[in-house]
Length: 121
Image (cartoon, rainbow, N blue to C red; front, side, top):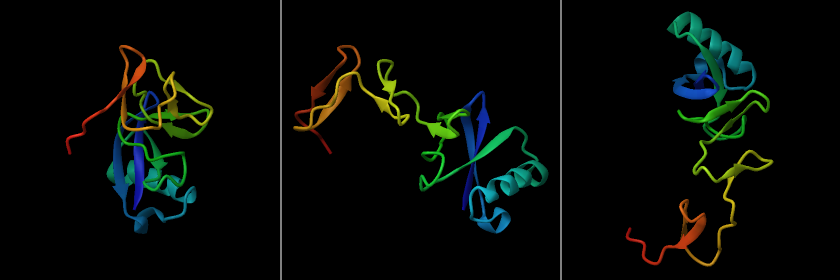
């Protein structure tokens, strides 16, 4: 199955799935065929970019809310917290590295990791 993300102002607003019988299963050739199908057969307007459910291209799968980077031709996850910044791989990183000796959650108010003592599953 081929997944296509609708891009508006560089933000993914919708994702549709098209059978590989329609556009093939080899990216990047499948993208232009899928875009033509979306416009001419389905009648959907706008900009559509193929996204990989298995993260095989454009960095990662792009559900609604993700950003499309024109410069890098990749999808970027939403910023989890205002203090987090993108690294050179376009992954969000906290301003303080997470401890590795247990379970922690990020506390934006104190800009620190808070140990989670009890996890109720």
